[in-house]
Image 1 (cartoon, one colour):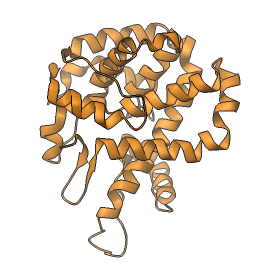
Image 2 (spheres, one colour):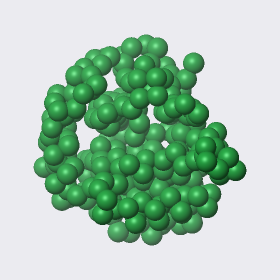
Image 3 (cartoon, one colour):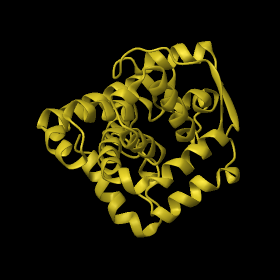
Image 4 (cartoon, rainbow, N blue to C red):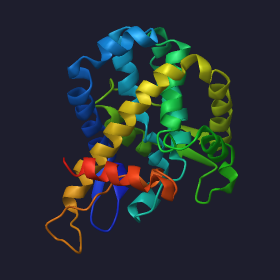
Length: 255
C-alpha cells in the first residue's frame, strides 16, 4: 500500500509517483540546464547545497498528506497539509543532522516554500490571513500521529529523492506549526531570495507532475479526444486572474 497524493472520479496519483515525477522534471528543466550554477552565486550556497535544498523541498512539500489519507481516498482535499509537512521536514533535518550542510536561512527557505506553495500566487496579505486563521478551516486535524505504518509509507515515498532515513513516530500538533510559521516570518527578509527560487521550481514541477500523472487518466466529457487538465489552477484566485489561468492551462496542454 502507498500513500496517495490525489484521487478523484477518474484518476489517482500516489505520493511516491508525484514526488518522483517532480524530481525528474526538476532535473530536466532546471538542474541539467545549469540552474544551480547560476542561482548559487545569487543566494550564497554552493551547487550541492542548493541541489539538496531543492530535493528536500520536493520530497516534503506534500508530506502532511499522510494525515489526510481517508479524505484523499474519498476524492476530497487536504486543507493546510503544508503545516504538517513543515513539521515532518524539520524532524527529518534534525534526525539527519542536515543543519551541518544547510544553514538556518536555507532551512527556513525550504520551510517557507513548502508552507506557501499553494498560496504563492496570492498576495502576501492573503497568505498571512490564511496561515493566521487556521481555526476557520474545517476538516483540519488539530493534531495527528505519524504512526509506524504511516512512517514507513512516507519514508518509501521520499526515498527516490532524498537519502533513506528513519522518521520519528510521534504526535504532531497544528499549534507547533503555527509557532514555526511565526519563527519563519521573523526572518523572512533574510532568506527571501532563496525562497523565491525554490518556490519557482516547486510551482512548475508540482503542476506539471500533476498534469502528466493525472490528466492522461481522464478525458474531457464533451471532447473524448482531449485530456482533461488536473492541476491546481484554483490556486489562482478571483476573476481578475482568468487570463493568467487560461495562459497556464494552454501552456500545460502542450505537454
